Structure formats: C-alpha cells, structure tokens
Amino acid sequence: MQPLQTLRSRTVVLPGANIDTDQIIPARFLTTTTRTGLGASLFADWRYDGTGAARPDFALNRPEARGCSVLVAGHNFGCGSSREHAAWALADYGIRAVISTGIADIFRNNALKNGLLPVVVDGDTGGWLLDNPGVEVTLDVASATLVLPQGRSVSFALEPFAQHCLLEGVDELGFLLARRGVIEAWEQRR
Image: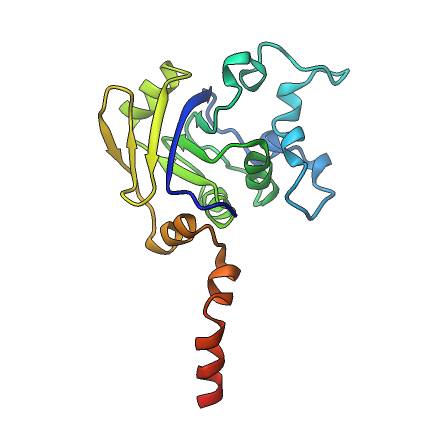
C-alpha cells in the first residue's frame, strides 16, 4: 500500500444514494483473489453499454474525470454485501478517497484496510460537493480534515489505528510484521 498523507485532487461525483457494492463491482467479476485488474470493472454496468462500449455520459467516462482520485457519492455509499472487492476496484482504478454523508460500516472497514480513505461529512458539505463536481479538494490524513476550494476546513472522524496505517502505508498484517521482534521476544518470555 502507498502511504496516504495529503491528497489533493479534483472530485468526480456520483450523486445517487445507496450505491451498493454490487453496483461498485458486479458479482460476475468476483472470480479473483488479487487486488489488481478490478478497476476496469468498476461500476461496469453503469460505465459500459451492452456491447462493452464506454457510456460517454457516465461520470467516470467524462474527460474531466481523468486523474480524479476523490469520489464524492450520495448518502449510504458501499451498502449491500461485504465484498472487499469493492474497495479493491476503487483503489485499482485510482480512487484514494470516497466522500459521502454516509458510508456503510463494512465498506468503511474494507476501505481502510486497503488504503482507501472513507470520509463522512455533514449534509451541507456533502450537498455542496455533490452540486460542484470537479472542484479541487485537499484531504489531510494527519489532521483528519477536508479543505474545500474556498478554504473552509471540515473535520472528519478517523480512528487512530486506521490513521496510522494510512499514513505509514501499511495494512494490519504489515503493522504486525513490523513488530515481529517485539512479538517474538514476548513469546520467548512466556
């Protein structure tokens, strides 16, 4: 995982509420246990038509979405099943953060374990972001703040352990492996 300390990006907006994990990555693409390659199937049923051609009107297919690493979505993003592939697909596509007024708990946990920052904001901030696609925002993981284009700073909740892992670019296993010597010494003493 790449460390995530400060992220400055334009936003791409999916305004719909209740975007579930089957919409994020349809079940037919869950045949892999690797994290790579799933970005091509991200929002597949919305991004592509029946022939596999890109739908030009879909937000991620628009030219202004190129290079955006912050997704702004409607309320209750990531609801549905517990598939970790949803977080993998977003990260593989290049999304590093998802901002919404509500993010499903299981998706939130999967996102954090895979270096993807889930940011829950208040209704006014979320509404403004939904109404202003393509604005440049800055996310600071150390201070757990979102800075909007006009300079307003919005705090968001981020557990200390998840914050540490994002800042260091490690997952839970990497965190434990970095403490291998301490763990082995403790086992020796027992």
